[in-house]
Image (cartoon, rainbow, N blue to C red; front, side, top):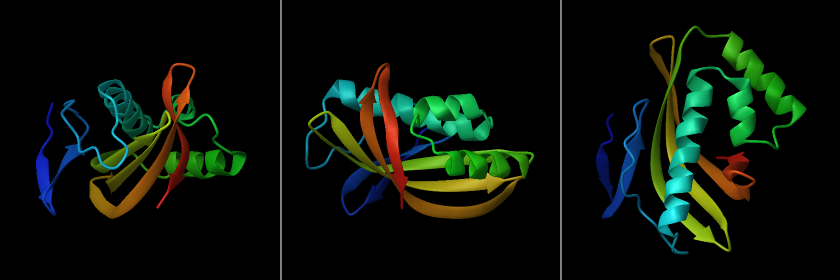
Length: 138
């Protein structure tokens, strides 16, 4: 398992790769508890795994509010590639009143070629068995 720290404007950020190491992350603004940090890390691991393994059921478990249109686009994306690797860099985490906002950079490699690197913002809310993604934005 690997995780590499990166320095950006004096803050710590962590790269989440296919083999994620649970490591300390930057907590900004609303202080996240250790329990919240760990729950967000588990959620990001499952989010990444769902995409890489093209597991729609796992994806739905991390984002239960998945709309019909989102599911259609996700199935199309899963069907269009042989392999899909995801690298996630968690840039910041803010938690307030049980909900969190995770700012990350995501890099996708499709069939061995890096296709895109882009920012993502995940609005995270408590679910019955831990945190779930409520909304995915850029």
